[in-house]
Image (tube, rainbow, N blue to C red; front, side):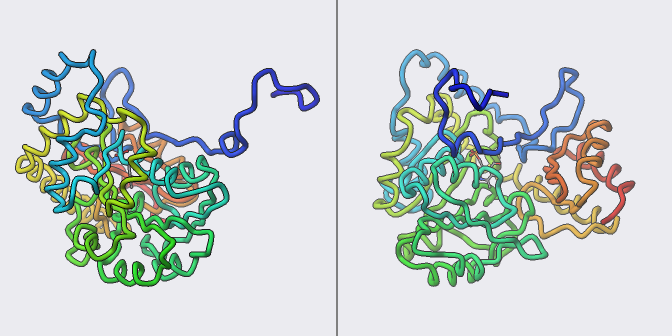
Length: 362
Ligand SMILES: Cc1ncc(COP(=O)(O)O)c(C=O)c1O
C-alpha cells in the first residue's frame, strides 16, 4: 500500500483507470492439457487446414506492416453485408472496435446505456473512456428489457448497447422489439448491436442487424471472427454502419490494428464459409442436446441462442465452478449469480451434463 502522506513515486494514472474492475478471462487449461475449456465461448473446432495454410504462408511477410485499412478484408465484408466499404471498420477483435466506437462518440461524463448482466467488457470500456455506464437490469428470463433501456436514455446518452444474443445469459432480442427501440431513441444516440454470436442464432424472430442498417443510419453492428469462425487467437472483428458513423470510428482506430496473419486468416475463413457453417450447425445441435439435457435435470436455462448456456447457480456459483474445475471442466463463474458454460466437443458436453446432474438446483 502506498503511504497517503508521501507523494507517489510514479505519476498517478487517471482516476477512471485506477478504479476499473479487471476483465476476468475464462480459466485456461493447465500444462497437462487435460481439462475441457468451456470458459471463453470459443469454437471447439481446430482451425480449418485451408486457413492454417494461408496463415502459415503469410508468416513470410511479417517483417512488413500489414495493409493499414485491411482493404481486401473490408471490401469482402462490405460485399457480404451489402454495404459500401466505407461503412466497414475492421479492428483487433470486436472488443477493440467497440473501444474505438466509444472513443469516437463519448466525451467524459457522457452516458452509455447497456443491459446488465451483459458482456463484462462493456462497463470497463465505457469507464476507460471517462463515460458512465447506465446498466438496465435484464428481465427474469435473462432478456434485455428494451423499453426500460429506451426509458434510461437522457440528454447525456451517446451510445445504447444491445448484446444479441446476450453474453452470458443467452437470449437474442426480437427483431420487432429492436425496431421499436430504434424508433424510440432520440437522434443523438448511436445504437450498437453486438452480434458476436449471430451465426449461432436459430430463433426466427431474433433481430437481424443487416436487415435494419439501410433504414437506420444510427445503428452500428459489431461482428467477430472469434466465435463462429473460430479465430479467437488471431483477434479480428469489425463494425458495419452508415459511412458517416464508420468514418470517425476508423479515425479513432489504432493504426495497423489488424495484423497480416489476422487479415489473411479472416479472408481464408470467408472463402471457407460453407465448411464453417457446417461446424456452426454441429455446435447448435450440441447446444440443443445440452439445453434439453439440462432441462431434463430440472434446470431452467434461458433461451440459449449463442454457443453457451447459463446456469443460475446463485450463492453457490463459485463453489460449483471450483468443483467443475476439479473434475476437469473449466466454466465461467459470475460470483453470486450464475455460471456460463460454452458448448464444446460432445465429450466435453457429456462431462458437463454428468456434473450438473449432481448439482443442487436453485
Ligand atoms: C458479446 C461479445 N462481444 C464481443 C466479444 C469480443 O469478441 P472479440 O474476440 O472479437 O474481441 C465477446 C467475446 O467474448 C462477446 O461475448
